[in-house]
Image (cartoon, rainbow, N blue to C red; front, side):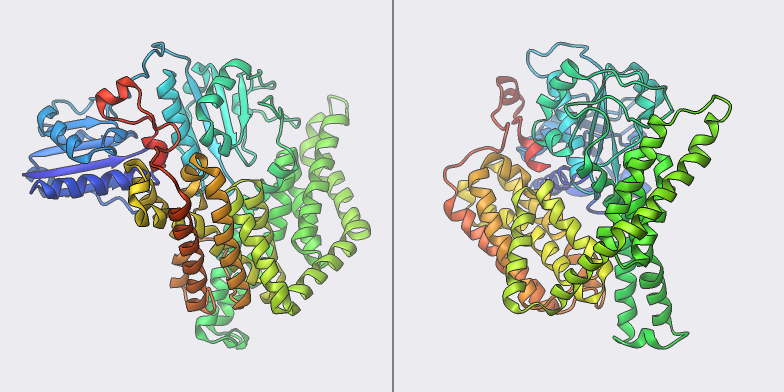
Length: 607
């Protein structure tokens, strides 16, 4: 029998990948000829050809995200949430074969509705949400999927807009915002919230939304305050929110700047690495391609990274009026040799100066309109520039010079200690404040020159270790892991290779007292080895795939050895100390779940 399998999940990261592979293997065991169309960010979507569709006897759509099924009108189609396919693919295929029916119209719903949790009230409160993390890769989409599943489980219709590395996806419409009872902003960076003015808004982090999704929804419905201002017009003071209220604190402002700077650093670093393909000193020959690549990467991209960092820190604090003084201050930081530390300082000075002028300077109504385009940029730029030149610039330049000199001339003992510290920090909270602090340190040092590329290598290597290690542990000690945990381990391996540390979060949430220490040991070991071997990395993201670009990493084999040993330490260590066989968080099935063969924690495990 010819079968088409379509999988799609809200995040498009892990669940779609796991379901497609599981269903494909189960279909082949039945002797079926199977073609898979997977809607995932891990692999590009390969649309089905007309001949394949015409030859199909059965179409199985395991989808929890919009997918166009109109092309299958007239075919036998079976649709169900993707979570139903994960626990037992064989049983799912049997049910699909028995329950499929001809698709009669193209307007039928594209996603099978989730069954409300037992005891939940029908017609719950309508909720809209936005998720955003600094890199826009893992936490953004995992938090979105967790909120979606939690909303369905609690009986509340919820729509989530993700603001990832490629911009806003599934953007909220004006009608959806208007009809929503509450807005959840699960954002680690500043996002434009002016469209939610007049709505009840609850602010939290992506980590909280991921690990405590149901509690986040309950808190939002019970405690969210009304956000002031006019829709479509941002307030300088920010809007209402959750526990912190208003705009985020300094940490969130810093992460906002880093998130905007990151693409510039990645592009610049890889362009510099590409210039080395023609020889380490080939860029010195004027008019050559190597010189052009170095000019684009080092001469343009790396010079813009500090102004971008400062400008968007100021933007996070004061909205658009802060961008101009922030970028001016960041450029001065670069010119004065103050580097990324000076850029951070310039961003905060510019942001709070612009915010103070916007909030406290009162002008006659006739000239009030000049404030955002003339008065604030002029005065805030003047304040920021003078502070940078006469107060902050020289001390910050001295600090950066000292840091760069230390990194360039440090002995092997100091290098190992620094690697241990950075590696352990990367593995402590898997995307939390400590992890992001180490990562920001490494990214910032890339602007300091070739002598400062070592910490970034250690940081990325250590960040890959926990998810790879958890995946290895689930393979080495299969009898200690439940089936959903083993499936989550496969996804964790893939995410780890991509430098997505969050792949190990399901394991950490279930068993933190064992997972965190063993991960820190493995990360510290990897970081120490990377620094000892003198590995240098030009780009701050991409995982093992960066190795495909010549000279993006030096000492490639030693770098792989460092990652392999750290990952084995985590995998073997956790396989030994893990006890029992337990589900991931929330995996205990309710009576309704058992009837349908679905554990409540399966989606979280796969995410």
